[in-house]
Image 1 (cartoon, helix red, strand yellow):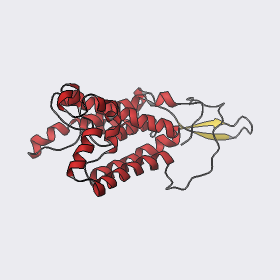
Image 2 (tube, one colour):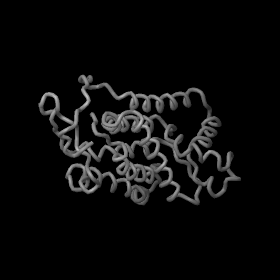
Image 3 (cartoon, one colour):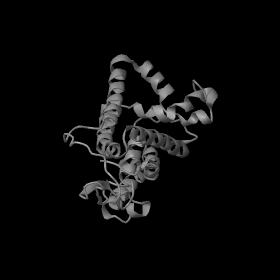
Image 4 (cartoon, helix red, strand yellow):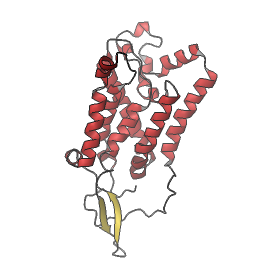
Length: 246
């Protein structure tokens, strides 16, 4: 996308129904819900343990591979597969709703493949941040929050930015081209994107302090949220083209 875009021809599409989600968003949310439903209906506690062990992300495999079934091998897929497992219905429903809200504008701007790539890469980034802050303890990461945080970060690059207007080269009519892609500086100078991002970052960074305040531990992978969000902020320029849609 060009910041001026006066010589671009936008893709012509019909108006979509208000509640129609992009296919990739429906697919990702559906897969997460279906996997959780299947695990609750089919697996007993032993099966759930094995599923989590083989498809959840366990950073300790890096240090003690001989003490964990599978050794190093699951590190090939678990930085991504952990995003499709959830601890309970509240966990998967919250992540699915979050996905719908922030993946939808990303999918409408970039399409299915870039959206999936952002989700997977930021899920892996969240896993790396989780590993960096939990090793050498043995902990397991599951849940889509790192990937959804990444899509949230990606959306921050444009959802609060002004709409660009260009000229149709054939008719001379003024046409809407979509929203400006903000630089990182612009994200943090625009009051709405800055306030949202800073509040979101501060709330997640404060999670480690919560147990001291309430007297009990909470199972929130704040590291994955922050890692995914930061990498998500960086990825959108890789997918910009000379035209886009929302």
